[in-house]
Length: 159
Length: 102
Image (cartoon, rainbow over all chains, first blue to last red):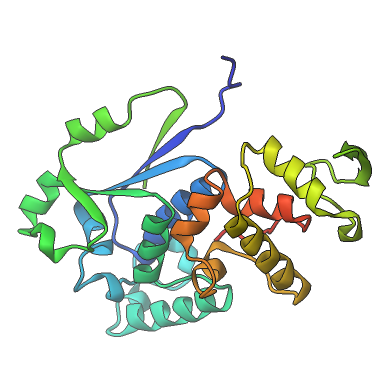
């Protein structure tokens, strides 16, 4: 069958725990489902913060080392700066009907996005499955994730 | 452009969405659902009517709004319209395709 190279499934790897990266991964996964494309997210390294029950409500945008913030690095490093920038961004997000991280995870799982946690990173941070968002299907290895990615029209994206 | 749906010539845009809701009727919905591989159950009709009412009330439809609707939850919405639910359901309902990314 000629599918014209259409995308059938997006495999998204989230390795960062900053708000802007977490939202990028979530919007891409959600947007895929909205278009009838399957989507899965593999959370690894700092990306695990986005599914850690105690941490997911407290993610921040990066104010240091982020030239697009248009803020001098010295200033961005001041105490409270990240929290200030994050709360400003969260207000803007609410204004455009963007859900918070927990609600977004609920939307993703209800939409059929499959969520996986990386075993190696879980071990490294001493996290347990029960520390994580309940919608996480399993803690898996890189090899498992590759097996999960088999098939035509599957695309992989690293955030 | 015009398209022949259920024996009637109706105005549609390039993606096949009706551009004049007054031309919509149940036979058109049934044919559009058939094209999408869906056979409409009573629950489908309830959801379609709900979407039409929301559109009439000028609510910008999104998956998040569906989840907060207390009418149909996201899971059921995906069960009823498995592939691209919001796009498919609005097309069958004869209302414009939502533009939200969320």
